[in-house]
Image 1: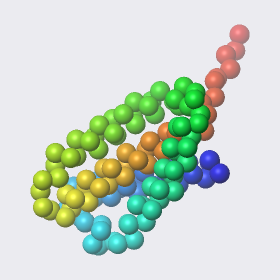
Image 2: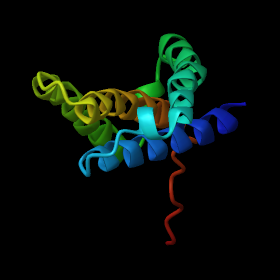
Image 3: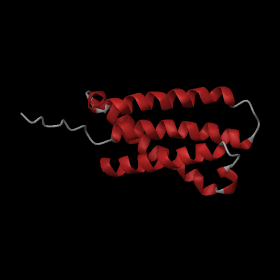
Amino acid sequence: MRSFLFHIARLGFILSLFTHIATFRGMDFQKELPVIWILYFGVFVVWAPTIFLLRYEKQLWKRIRFWMKVAAGLVLIYAACNIYWQNSAAESLRTRLQSAYLMAFYFTSLCVLSPPQTKSIEKT
């Protein structure tokens, strides 16, 4: 089940990243492609198990790869910085803000639900 949720989180992150990048070209997926709203439902599908794992697995952050922790921090900072850009009334900018939040939620879930890091065997 965890592997299935990991793949949903990965797909959700990729789609929200694509949506976010497309907003820089002036596209508004909420009007042009309303099925994009399924991303909002997908966040709840992966976020609930993520919160459960964060609450009950005490050593969870130790098994997450270092580069994933750094990338998750950068995505969260980027999503938080998008608050300052929301003052415009443009629809594509609102979609950009929402897709940034989706990226943050999906990538955090992606990190938590990722397969455990395996240690490489050194040859002696």
